[in-house]
Amino acid sequence: MIRALFVAAVALALCGTAHAAGAPVVVIDPGHDLRANAETEPIGPGSATRKIKDGGGTHGVLTGIREADLVLGVSLRLRALLRRAGVRVVMTRTTTASTSMGNIARARIANRAGAALLLRVHADGHASADVRGTHTLVPEARSGWTDDVYRPSRRAAGLVQTELVRALGFPDRGISERSDFTGFNWADVPVILVELGFMTNPVEDRRLARGEVRQRAALGLCRGTLRFVGVAPSRCGV
Ligand SMILES: [Zn+2]
Image (cartoon, rainbow, N blue to C red; front, side):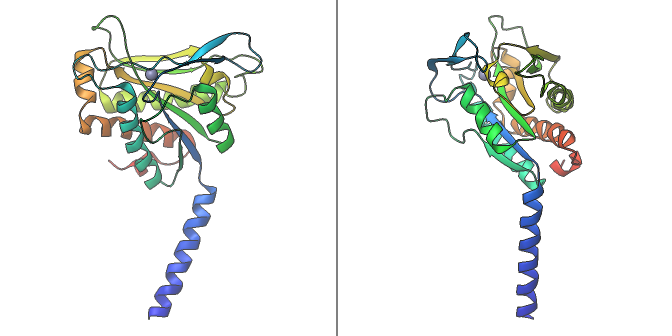
């Protein structure tokens, strides 16, 4: 009996390993870090245009919560959901403790991982406290930089934005293309950047501070990601 159980356990372990090896890899990139990074880097391969590595992100107008902490919280919840659904997850960071690594480094982590998707998680800020809503950004198609990842990135953005808006209930600001994002132009894998909501809007700041709302955001991101990689979104749970 013990021997039979042992054999069954080994078989299960082997089966689990084989499954994980064939599973898609998703790289989650929680935006920013503890400190901004004023060093510059070229916005795309071979470009003479340089931008700073990280301006540091925004913060909650009421709560004072740092964007870096909010997006890491959502990203860790998302990691748990995706892993449970059988997706292999690589994180660009798991703490908010350092100077931000910059966007070429973030893209290279996804390139090296052969990611099915690089999912960049951010929250927005605006000079006007009235501006609010959920927004997803994708690379503009540019020959030699992003033409190879443009179409799958658009498809991923559509799926994730729809699920995220449904999960959070914030206004839908749609999808925008950007040609000037270093983290897009260096990516050799499909890439999107979600702006969960506006931390400069009191309603969205207060809601995004709640664990239950962060879990809903993670669930929306999980469902959109699973749709993109061809796994049933129900595997994120309810
Ligand atoms: Zn940000």
